[in-house]
Amino acid sequence: MHQRVRFGDFVIDCLSRRQLVELALDDCRREIPARLVFDANGHALSLARTDPHYQTNVKQADIIHADGGFLVTLSKKLGLPAIPERSATTDMIHDFADGFSGTGHGFFLLGGEERVNKECADILAGQYPTLALSGRRNGFFTAQEEADVVEQINASGASILWVGLGKPKEQDFCVRWRDKLNVRWIISCGGCYNYITGDYGRAPDWMQRMNIEWIHRMATEPRKLFWRYA
Image 1 (spheres, rainbow, N blue to C red):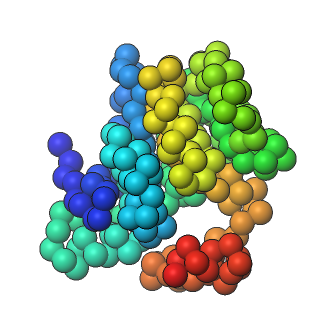
Image 2: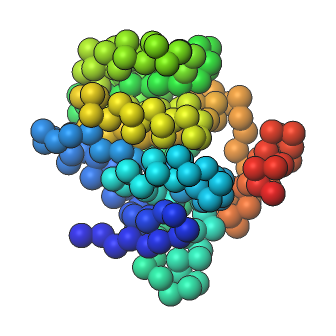
Image 3: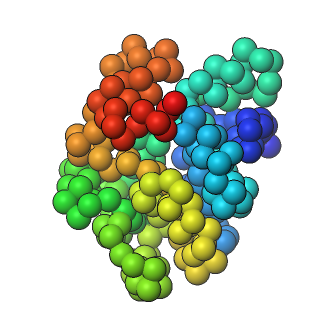
């Protein structure tokens, strides 16, 4: 049994990216209800302090992984249960794609603009030819259409649902529909698809290693991200 560590309103699972993949694969081999898998980073910790509804939704998660590298550093420096490594969703989706290749357990990609969603699916299909891509749908739908979206996901037979609607909308969707979804894992992934397509750029490796990728992101999208990080 792995350890957990609390930061703010988040109880983070001390799991490596490989362990997350192995746990998901094990769950896909069993008949279990869908697990909610959310991420923790600076934005998430701040949002949980200012948005009570988001905070409530976060507490419904079965697994919370450390998307923010500073959480890994703090867990070790403060002598807390150590988080093994950063599990940025933009990296983790590739870990999952590789680990799930050839297993028959498919992905459903929900969220993003239509162009981005389709291009992301095409790129993953090209990079991981034996990965089952069960279905996809852009993130533009009304509340009245949500039941139809859930029906589409279930009809696809997917095992892993990636939900890229952005915080706090994606957590709200995941919690609201978890009991109606037939998948094994529901993973919130924010703007992950945009990184795969190249619409968003990653910081240089040295910035990622120093846990200051947020500075790169803020510099590239200051109008959108300045107040979030402030």
